[in-house]
Length: 232
Image (cartoon, rainbow, N blue to C red; front, side, top):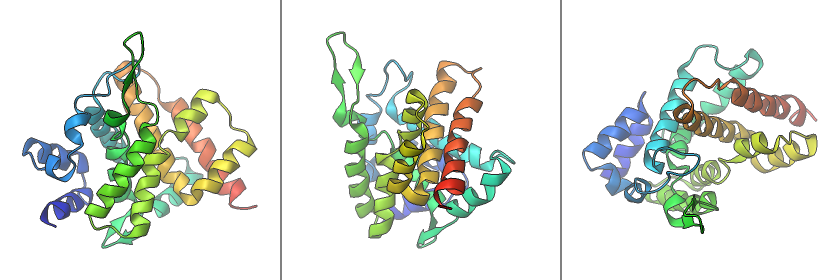
């Protein structure tokens, strides 16, 4: 369990990003998560200028920086988000620490789901479903309990929800409430993951782009969950 404990300790670090980079440089991370080797070979496409591994690290860094920002979230959300992230799952592992792992793993299914169309363009359809299974297996190898594994899998499986809402612009009550019914309080973690996924991608495509629009979508959904859905 030595390697597994190294990863768990990294999740508890103030900068998990730095810890994972160091583990990779020392050829330790690949022994814990073998899929990172393939993640370094795929991912570049119309929407990503870096491979899946680099993107996942960028998203993780975005998460840690976002949570450490003062007054980042609107006042009516900040306390509830903090309370969610501080929930202890097991052995001192909080939802925030597990979410950091979920962010790093969110595109781990891309290598196995990669296809190339007739124009030579790469696609990764269904990578979230493939990634969910990988997350479950990794959670088991880390010795997480059943509920922790289910939550890790949930983060990976549903990480594209915010992107879907943004693209389709369907913020109807029926659509949102159906999502809330599936995710319950974990909509908070899933949307944070989705926000960091989108923003870390867009920053490389357009460094001067304002991420406020994505934040507004995230906060609108969270407001509806916390102040409409949970109160009905």
